[in-house]
Image (tube, rainbow, N blue to C red; front, side):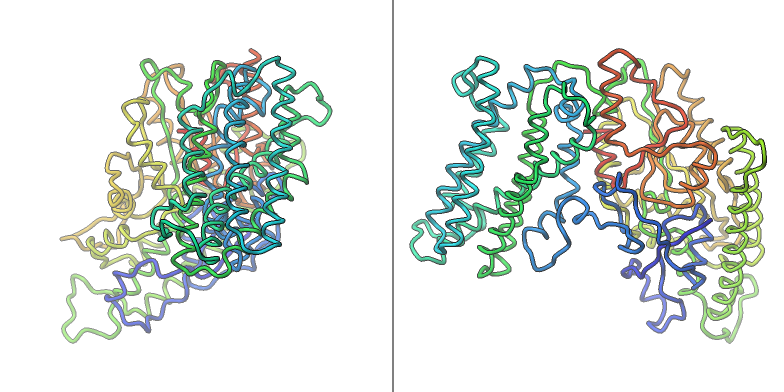
Length: 639
């Protein structure tokens, strides 16, 4: 059964405001999370919404963040899910909230995936520990410099405690070295990634901050406090990142397996004591920042972000000799195999369904009064009448869609669930979608839209955080990876999708969607229907694969968010589910589909891959991998 989250979203069509008065009759636009179809979004756009679902986001997803989901029904906001409660009064928590998704690039590094799976070569871990000793010694020195600058006894005491905790951390590293019979500092000089961070940290602690406006001679108590705040701001993301990674890796360890070679490392950073140190660092940063100006807080935010980037680079620096499943795009032979990425569009890539955009555009641009000299060739409904038509279409759609999903969920006695039975069930949904689209065409509610207005709307349509960056990176590496990229969508208007991606320099994507039929750049209300249903999407998916060659000469990934993507998600080598759709989960599980968080699955697959029990292409059938962030998709696929 369909469950909905909804809330108002910011004005996403600012350039279109000039096309209609501010008193436009359209209701506040609403975002949907769970539906598979475009008309369902119009239903919510125009007011036919059920109450938000109270289904709680599974604990396994709590650290993965997500798009623009509202914190309704127990869905956990990204920042709090990744270790920090949402507190706008805390600079440290606010900075982490802005940077937390980037931590996924450290989590999906070959080093950390190897460490979590226990397959990391000991030589790589030894290199990491040796580099971390250089890093931690610099941390101790930076704390000492910050203590000299702090003018508050409580702040000084807190800095001393944090410095002592780092000393204890060094003792753990020394215990590793003793077991190996090596002297860490004597046998390893700082590598480039280590030197970048340590040089950055010591320069910050010395008051050499770009844009920080710190005098060459630090004399006054306020100047010293500011330098202390800058220094702690450059150290805090390290503490929070390690606490986050420790918890995430601990969750994928078998609690009964005491033979894991890196359990001691994991338990240290997943411990309550380390979390307490991370929180203490954040509280210290907040305390030191109290008297700073907005401009100075912006400096700390830049330092925080720079430190996070340097930390991620540090995790990617250890030399790797073992085979790794990450980044996923690198495990196929680009000289012999093609790497194909498919993605849904509405609410997978975007923050609002395209049908909501077209509905608002139609109403905004419709005449408010009867024209004095009507043009019989381009007669349009008045805005008020058009809204009533949308109301009727949307209400009918919402009621019939819900009934269709309920019918598909019915279990017949003795029925065996399979891909074939799922396909048959979704054929019923496909027939329903085609009937709904036919009603839209016959109603002429999409008649009279100007192609230039549609393109302008597309240029200003918001994408999910990280989505554009992922596709831009993928396009940059297209030739190197021998990659092909396809967008599959129910969207009524391919021109809208094309303008969205074109505005981001992504003209090379293959877009498969329905198309408006125009006369002199004005929509006739008719649609050239090409992709209307789950089965249509599957056919387009299969046709694209067929053009790429034999099965053993390609690897495929499909990214989607809803019931309409289910068949393609299951047919791809790896199916990735963005967000949390109750209807997708319920229907999938009804037909035997499993939904597994991506990171634990990658760790398990890494263990099997190195152990020789499976090949890199043998991802299990009937399993879909859940994420809630395009950063996680990029970290897994591209690194």
